[in-house]
Image (tube, rainbow, N blue to C red):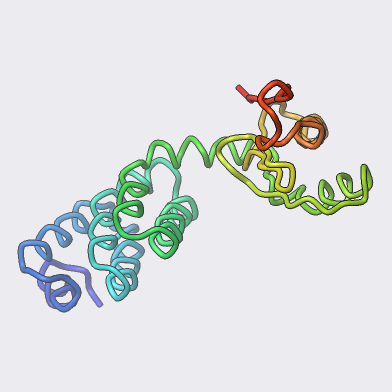
Length: 196
């Protein structure tokens, strides 16, 4: 299908609630470089079946995303927003799409650093070896523990060397492991690690 104004309007008519939204999305797509139009159009069609507002927000920012992080990064950005939508709802998903700069910064950090998901299993065995009790490991924005769950950062990028970033994960896990629980008396709260 040729992606001209008439064909786009015809195909997108059933995806959005009013014609002015269709016109805006068509303009967003036509403003893209020709080799990106089909990519964005296909995603807008697909996402609009789930949630039209997310498709609209994606179309409005897709050009910036494609320039900054390319096709794969753009797909990851959209998929991340869809994950937020299914986990927390529409408004957080829209905020996720609007915060493209944050996503780009996080993606660059992930590309330089070591992701928690890659070391989770090894850390789990390491911690089990310390005491034999199974602690839950989770990725979180804030590094903390309740003595049953250790919350570690999603990415550590303190060094360009993977081994040093892994050592930092291990050190963080050890500090959290030896930290008292927030349920302990106030005077015994000694360790809270903040990564900067």
